[in-house]
Length: 458
Ligand code: ADP
Image 1 (cartoon, rainbow, N blue to C red):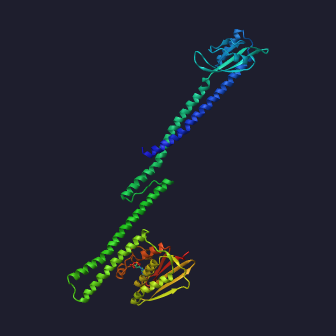
Image 2: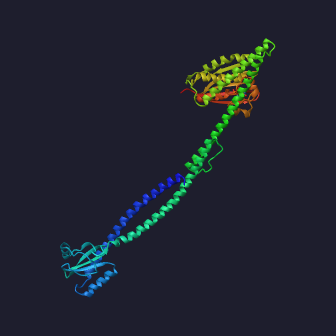
Image 3: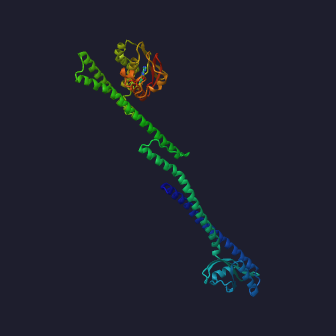
């Protein structure tokens, strides 16, 4: 038997015994007292009745009649004369009456007398009543009943109680066993499941899910398995993506350095071209590593933010200055529209700058001609920034995926344009850890619009 069944069983049985034992003891005491009092009342009544009804103390037949009566009543009697001498008895052997007792009786008072039979050693409770003929004390009539009479029915009841206690014990035992099994089965199943999960077998599930706390524990274990599985798949994909992303630039670097090492170029211009490729690819690897590192820190919640009241209008102006050159290179125009009074927001200025530059660089990267609109406004305690372009756009079905790591709509183009596929994942993380939100809308070949919102500093 498993240990939990045993423990539960012991607890329940102890409880049953803890209730039954004192109950039996108390019932025993109360019942004994009850029967004792009942017998006492009975013999008091009998002794009074007999003492009042007896007509003669000298007539042997009368005395014998009373003895027979006592015999049928299952009682012992003895009758004394006025001096306390026993003149008739049912062979009960006891001490003579004391002077005190005799005095009580002669004054017309009944007495109590508990005795022990000298021969049988049995204890009797007795009651004596004075016999009066025309108000003169003639003797006394004693009726005795063995104390055992008070105990006998109690013993019967005690036996019954004992029997029912044994019955209750076994019933309880069976019940406990069933209950404990019912409780421990799901627990054992959960133990097996968690051990399997710990071993890495993440497809295992807890199937017994009772509608109680054990059930919720089981579901929690199942959720844990699902989550761990998702985490594992995610991690696998991440590693696959990282190695894939590293492989391309590194094979470029390796290939072109080989070309240079073996002098496999014809003109100085060609050599310069190869060197530029090596430099660009090295830069890409560095960017990739830095971005990955940033993202990992963010996902673990370990990034340090210098939160302060920030003026977004100022952040935007600095960002615009930084991307101006790229805009000019591609022959695009940047239209900035900043509303009059913009409240400060609680954020990290440098990280905000990183977000805006990233979105602007994407807009530039994926727009061939036209304009990029950058707007800043505030509404209902929130500050909004929108970055809209007139570029290639994003297909509808791709929109929910673009914030995922390494997700690119057109892999080769993004790569050719210098993207790592991590930019938007970082942006979304950065926005969210600064209590902001980011949303995107886009139309293919028309353009894309990102909107950020941050709560006003309180
Ligand atoms: P990347 O480094 O490839 O740009 P991002 O995470 O920044 O990675 O963006 C993910 C993908 O979303 C990009 O590869 C691109 O396909 C798409 N994307 C992002 N911004 C824009 C935009 N302004 N216009 C069109 N497509 C975009």
